[in-house]
Image 1 (cartoon, rainbow, N blue to C red):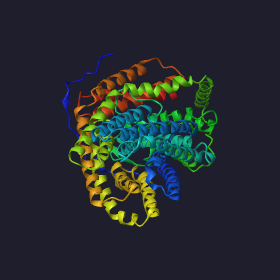
Image 2 (image 1 turned 135 degrees about the vertical axis):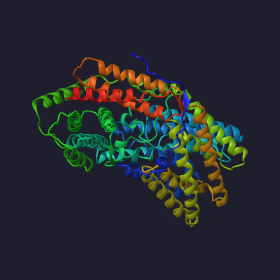
Image 3 (image 1 turned 90 degrees about the vertical axis):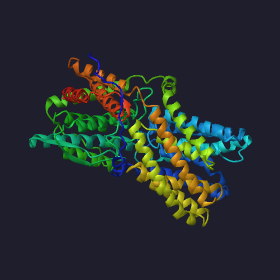
Length: 597
């Protein structure tokens, strides 16, 4: 296998502005984390209000905010994931509280908060827990590190309140399963059907109109260039040392957002369909033995994507997806030609045999995330450097809350330098507008405790809707919510709060971006080479039937596109062989169609 003809390393500066600020369509499941987060926080805040101890909000909300996680996972997997998130949240909070109790040194507190930020980032990226990622964990831990007057004897009580909040979050997160136990699986398969329908429609239009290209997504959620498709394969970690993608994959929340392109091929639409199908299989394989109807739909979608027909067109696929989202009975695919029926039955039999195999040993399964985190040392070091630099800079300027700078620096770190720039720009703009919103609503919140609670819950709810459209829009509501949370411990002067937030945001964004620029991902191009060689090797293998061959090829396509998108956004990297990558992707999609036919 020939090596990629990489040319000499050279800087390439990409600082998109309009693309970074462009609004995407509203996410398809934004209401799920929104309602869960509001419900868990409401239980905690109202209980503290009844007890007359709203000053303990930070500790109880640490556990309650875990209700924001895991909404794309089947309920069995969600139960485990929420348990680990609560454990990680409380471990970081406990470490921060102990630090606050043992030392009054702001520099040491900043260092501990920055180290926790790096560990949170590595853990979330390695396990691909999904949104809201490391930011909530880091915000709570960094805030706890700067609690004034913290005593060591109070740490058990405060952590205990976090445990109670975590229990509330776990119950709230699992409660929808009592009504719709297959909800996450339905959403995952619906996304795959919708992405496949776009592919089928694009292919039909290309056949019917000479020289007209297919339909591709206009832009990814968040307004950034086409993002790495990491969310489609939540169970497959990225290579060690890579920055995990931040923007959600297109099939997850941008239904119907398409535009016509001139003179290009449809490899992006094919990639989106492959990623959505891959993500749906990952979800179904975690869901046990009771989703056979959904598996039949997904197998039929594979047949449709492979030009095998399967007796369905794009409109039928979209109708099936609509039925799944609405909770209607799972559609039954119609009979089709004998060859396709036989291939689909063979695949379903293979899936059943795979599910019958013994599960991996529990101890080995739980060790995997810790091993992955240990390999992500570069992420830990880079986030620590940026967060510590931001916190110490804030301390040197005499800002009252350096932990806000730490959180901003940690939030800026993204999949590559270009995405980090976009995130920094979004964070600064969103916080500027958020500070203005805070000055408008803070007089109302000081009418009483109930008004403050209502304002916080409203900000939490709106945040989950806004952030699916763009990170900057979500930050408009995150910033005032974070500032209002400080009011539970006692009202402070508004001008000081506003100045602290604005200075810390600018310092954190600058320091985080500087760390990303000074420590670029120099393995990015090598991962493209590895992914390209793997895909070319799989395409060159003799044509064999079986689900394993399709899974390996589909995974290779997703990994190559992810690696190429990450490498293309680094400002200092080798020039990528774009023509060879595109040719390999076309060949891979063609071979995938042959394997699925």
